[in-house]
Image: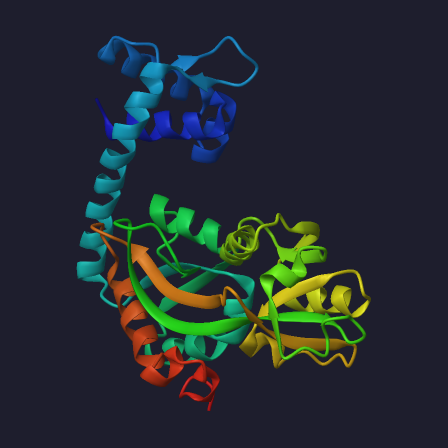
Length: 308
C-alpha cells in the first residue's frame, strides 16, 4: 500500500469521479483507475460503486475512508513539521471568519501581524460560524473564529468578545419606543435572520423556541448592513450585536435592548484539539491573544487596544 494510492482514493471519494480526481491531481485517469484497482485487490474489497452516474463509496469504502484520512493527515503533518524546522517563521495560515467578525476586528490585527512576521501569509475565508467549525475540524482551515457554544472535546479555544444582541426595528414600529423587548413580544413579527451556517441563526431560533414560538423568517443574509436596510423599509425585525448597531447610519432604524432570554455575540478563536498546529498558526494564535486584552472581552471591547 502506497501513500499515493491513499491520496488518489480520497480524491476520487471527494470528487465522486475518476475524471474529476485526475484533473485535480494532474495525473491521467487510467493511472488513478489502476492505483485504485491495486488498492482494492490488496484489501480484497470493492471500494467504489462504479455503476451509477457518479462514483459512490461502498460500505467498505466508507470504512476505509475514515482510516485513510487519518493516515494521510499524519503523513502530511510529518512533511509540514520538517519543512518548518528548516524554514522557521514561514508559511501560510488559512483562517475562517464570519463576515461581521472580519470587518470589526481583523484588518488592524492582520496588519500588525504582517509587520512582525512578513514571511507568513494569511488567507481569510469569510463564512458562517458553523462552516468555520467544520473547516477547522476537518483540517481545511488552520484556525478560525466561531460563535460560542462550540463542540466540546473538539477544539481548543480563546474567548475574546461577549457582546449583547440587540433588536433593530423600523423607527415607526410598535416596539420602537420600548426600552426592553422580550422574545415573547416578537412571535407575530417577520424576521430578517442570518443564514443557517451562522451561529447566531441557531441561537436566535433557540431563544424564540424558549419563548414558545417558531420565528417567521422572511429573509436570510450574511450582511448586517443589508439587514438594516430591509428593516428600515419595514419588512421585518432583525438582530445585531450592540457593537455593530453603532455602525448603523439610518434614521429609520431604532435599536432596542432584548431580554428573556438575553443572548450574546460570544466569540472565540478556535483550533483543533489534540492535533498538529503549524508553527505559523501558533504564532498567529499567540499574537491574536496578545491583542485581545482583558478589556476586549468585556462589553466595552471597542475601547481596548485593538480599537485605539
